[in-house]
Image 1: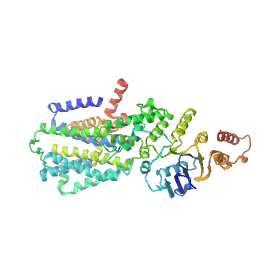
Image 2 (image 1 turned 90 degrees about the vertical axis):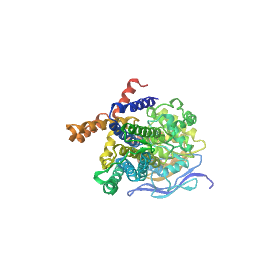
Image 3 (image 1 turned 180 degrees about the horizontal axis):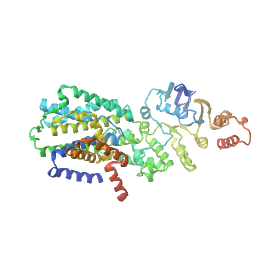
Length: 272
Length: 309
């Protein structure tokens, strides 16, 4: 096999006091692709994410990034290696301006972040680059707005701009379209498509419409274990996936009941 | 711009104040104002509630007192020694404390400060309950006699301005920008690649050293280093000063310190002297319940509402 993997996990396990949240997950994320992690609520998607970004320590197993074992590294350390994550709730610095938010990320490579005796005017030379990044997500007109006043969709766009400022090799997005209206969903998914050039994206996503549009590969999790993997056609044709999402298999449902309607609706969403 | 104008006005006020008010009282206000500014750097700008800052105030005081009494250093070197000692203590305490968050951070700092308090209570060089008395003010740079209160006042004022400038600069520096980011959203700061504990630690050391500077200066002013400065009451008092004045504002701690010292001075002379702790407690409760932004914070809100854009 000559496939180039950015991120690989081998037999990743996370146990919380006897409860296995992540059960022997072997994840392989191919370089240059958008890889989606889907599954019903409580399937362990966010736990996997927290393990990959070291916000949680795995009970067992190994995580390889570009072939290097990063299982024991700290969050900030892997961030400096080029693995940048987003959070389920929009991760911005609410009482800083939009421009300052992006500058925080740009500042890291300047090597002056411990300089308490210098004026913060030295950071102004980063403004041009920051505006450029804001332009790439359509936020240039909001540069001096206090972030807390932005709409939800724009906050997520800002978050992506901030992440891009670090030019990450691997972007981990935790439910980037969660809680958004239709318009924002389209804007953000277009944005993700656009920024995916030259980099790899691993995302947790509930919105199957977004997944079908964006993802090259999909891994379905259920009860902490991998149910199936493949491209959208393969995964969506798998009856186990539908069962996992609805809790019942198709032929168990009595036609005309609420459960049937729900399943039909879900099916429609899956086949969009 | 706003801050610059206010700062110029305050400097002017500070220069003429000793002709109107008693210089020793003013020096006391300045020492506590510096202490509160140092404390506010942690609470207001990093979001860390230290409940052991008296340890640094006390350490600054005792070390400076010892250096002046027994080593015979000049005042500027004595103060430098006290400040550095508090900074070193802060470096050790900070290393232990920044690993914890919220209430645990407060408890670790309190416990470590109590350790220092009992050490000073027992150590022979501190004079125990009596305190370290008769510390000479000495001659600044070897030729400016500080025994005159007016001269001493301007020396203290200069020290205060330096400390105030340093806090202000730290807040408005590339480093301060990261501190704000940590206060706003710590997990995000981590995910952007910042080792947040290192930043908290540096802020802790700066804050401790400046608290030490305040203690050192205070010892010279009153020619006394006492256990009061290292007691946990003092750690609580600085919280009150900062909250009353306005946490996270530049001028809040100064206003808070001035208010608290004035109230205490006024009460301790009168019949209400015995009730001083009850009255301070009431003020604290009212402040936390009714105007949480503190005096300066509330004023800023009013200005913003009426003249802001």
